[in-house]
Amino acid sequence: MAKPQTRSETALQSAVMRFGDDAFRICYMHTKSDKETLTLLSDVFMQYFLDTQTFKSEGEERLWVLRTCLLYTSDAA
Image 1: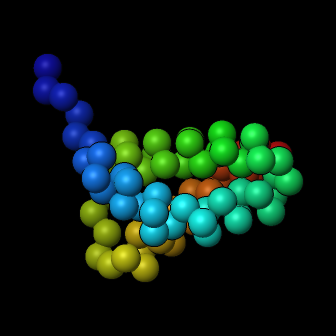
Image 2 (image 1 turned 90 degrees about the vertical axis):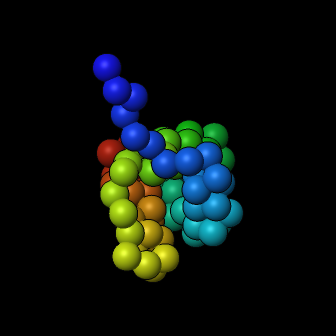
């Protein structure tokens, strides 16, 4: 059985460096808890790692990450 495709660790690290601060702010704004925010960020970036969608631009990639944060925070509420 073929291994499912995921993003590289380098791509994940790059996304965390580029979008992590904004993602943290969004999650924290909704949860008001450092612990819950970090849990949500782990979930969001794990989803990013597992998702194989190709983005047309950095803006589109950023939007995906931030929308996923909003989705996860609304699910956590």
